[in-house]
Length: 112
Image (cartoon, rainbow, N blue to C red; front, side, top):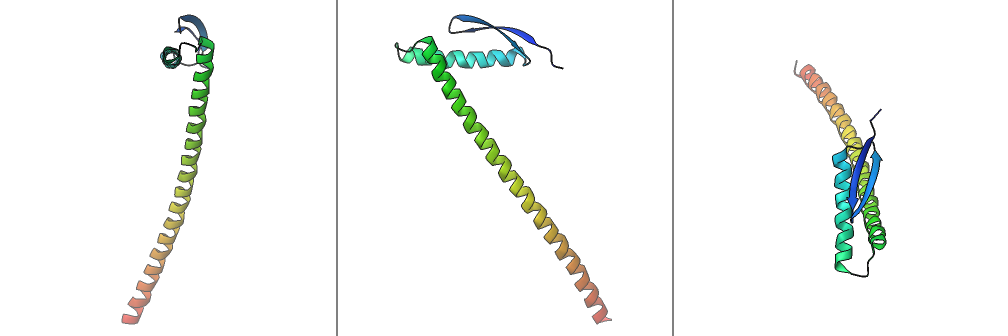
């Protein structure tokens, strides 16, 4: 079982304590990414509050996650198709090899 890490984060000048199974460096990288996203939103529009920036950042990250998941699913599907095609082509090649051997034997017998 993975050990729980108690991690202190600062996002938009607010301190958070997070308990996670993930390594501390990873959680801090996520927090830094969120902090940057939120600060960029607030720096570009003074009307954007911390809460609004958090919601907009969450929507952006959720959108990116959904698109990445769809892309990964598509790649898995393509790989599955390629593997299936590969197996079919290998079987056809093996059948052609056996037919080639049979024809060689037939030819050898005709030559004798």
